[in-house]
Length: 212
Image (cartoon, rainbow, N blue to C red; front, side):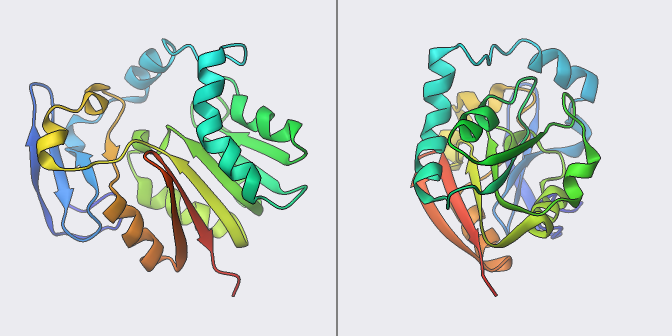
């Protein structure tokens, strides 16, 4: 078995609950669901369709601002951006576009536009989506190819703290959540891909691509 993020073979058991087994990579520290227990695309969409992420939902807008506000403070004017994993409605992309940035968006189920992966962008935002990726390593390499030098990768996802807290963590109970990142995982990604890591909040990190 290979780690779905770093492709390493040093994998161990992390936790088991009533529905799933969770594994742990000893190199990059990713925690992930046993590949034999991953949901199908049809099962995922059934759950996603229950989400109420609308542009007129004040609570959802407040949630997105946890990433949007610090990102806007750091972006140069008129940046070219991509919101990855936007869901049915690209709410964050529209929030950033209002502030003058040129936005594209992508979602494998709701906005599957393969041509997006040929673009070059100044920043990529990914809010509460990376934990859904079955093969986060492949997507990460796509991001690195797409991101311009000096660009920013802005990620929102709740982070693994410890095995003890994971056992009682509500976040793992969503059956579409299959890849769980810790701060150690983001440090590994920063080192491995020559990125500068900024921990912005308890569930927000920015990673900056080197200029050379």
